[in-house]
Length: 473
Image (cartoon, rainbow, N blue to C red; front, side):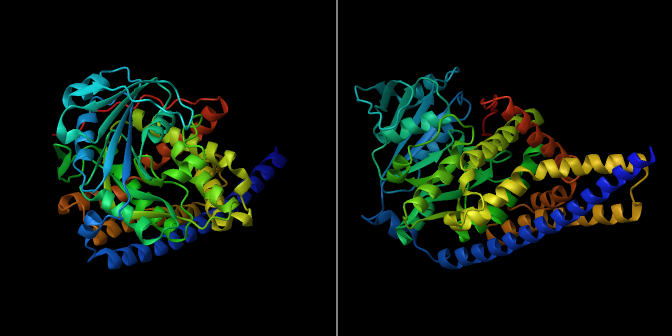
């Protein structure tokens, strides 16, 4: 018994040392990325503060864009979304709405709203996809650039590939059908392509529309949701986009462009084979594959992130739906890293192989497992009376302070740079939630991501039902 007690004590002390080292490493890395992100945002604001986007709007050199909006059971939000896309300020664009075999009345709603008729247009499968049942166009002149495709259900990746096949223009913009773009979003996200011809993909920031007022496809009043779950997600999105992806984009190490809003060179996407349909993380996997294709073929390229063009999306409002989403995201991360495991610590892939992929593997993928084991170890230590209360309390307080600091810093970075929430009340609420999320909400998200490993091992490929309540009118 004494031997067992000593063994447990050694194990706990060893893991405690590992946790402390991991904690220091992670927070030093986060601080470095925050510093890079802050500099990148300041540089972006300085370069774009006096930019006249009317020049892009009027220029004949501005590349045409095909906007792809896949939809599955999106009858609650599809009309507002399509209306917002049709009203975008952009010289030449087509909107391709892909109904991925919805079981609700999504197709009927769109046909009725936009007065659609079926055409005899031939569908060419440059990328192999599920069968297309029909291609529709509007009889109304104001919607002449709208194309609606009805297809057999095959998942989001398959729907996007159908959109790429149907598209006619050199740039394709992938968005979610429940998303709403601001008027000048395309003008801002296309600018990196005009500034640097080596740019192959650009991601735009995604913000949460819950609590905002939507009128005819436009966000007219920005407010924070009265519900806690969407409000917590606002802080998470700030950390992910402003304190994360902005920094990764600055060093050309960005692995993720949100499926809710991204712009790509169509020819590179086609050369890469389009979206991979047998993964739930098709957005991340395509970006990693584009990185890899260019690296392996010695093609100069950049993948950038722009923090200003806003895409508004409806976030889950219940823990059940949010859990499904986070589980799917983590399964997608795991699958992508396994598919491209060759890149891990491979100097051939530059910053991708030596920094980005190791970070996402060690911190983003396995971080929740390490954290959960830490909670378990602390519980065992308390039960056996092997925990030094003073040291534990000090470490706990420091870890919470660091977590709060990064959350609050992300909120303040948003407030200083773009000030999207005009009400002081909303800003104060976000600052308070940046503290509160460390007690309960964070631990729940850890559990969801750990469960993702089990679901992946079981071969779960489904998204899980993502129930929408629709935008507030």
